[in-house]
Image 1 (cartoon, rainbow, N blue to C red):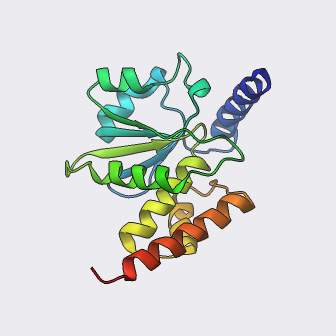
Image 2 (cartoon, rainbow, N blue to C red; image 1 turned 180 degrees about the vertical axis):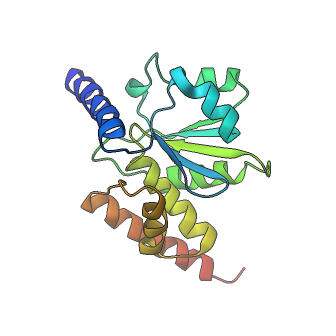
Image 3 (cartoon, rainbow, N blue to C red; image 1 turned 135 degrees about the vertical axis):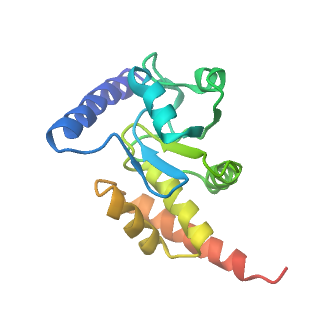
Amino acid sequence: MFLREFVFYVSTGYSFVRKYLAGHKWYTRITPKLILGALPLRSFWDEVQRTENVTHIVSMLEPFEVKSFVIGSEEAESRGLKHLSLPVRDFVGVPTVEQVEAGITFIDSCTDPNGTVYVHCKAGRTRSAFLLACYLMRRDRISAEHAVKLIKQKRPHIKFTTAQWSSLQDFSQIDSSQQEKPP
């Protein structure tokens, strides 16, 4: 566990460096209802919640990644936010079909026409982007390639491993076959 925590802090530092040196945004609005972002840091969360009208948070962090400087489940709820935790291992993990379904259902539960769902992992590049791609595939009935292209147009630094890309394609096939079945 020590090694994973060490990697967490190093890669979080790397995210800060990329933000300031490469101009990567901490979070990006993907659709009127969805924001894809990095850690919801306490230091600027009040402003994000207010200016972006965030009403829901989906966290893809593992429990050890929720640190004192990050808005966790209890704090989110104390701020009036609905919160869903879908822990997925960083760098190599792939959300399960059950996690994806829970995430899609949760996002759809944001019925406030002005409300926004903030979907995040540590850097807003892989785990959370995976869930948003699945959401867009389902909502818009588009391919994995098209969903990823739409996200990359707004947040070009998202990145998937071969296993994650394969799982996106698998979800697309499973989802499209379920949608084609008659009621």
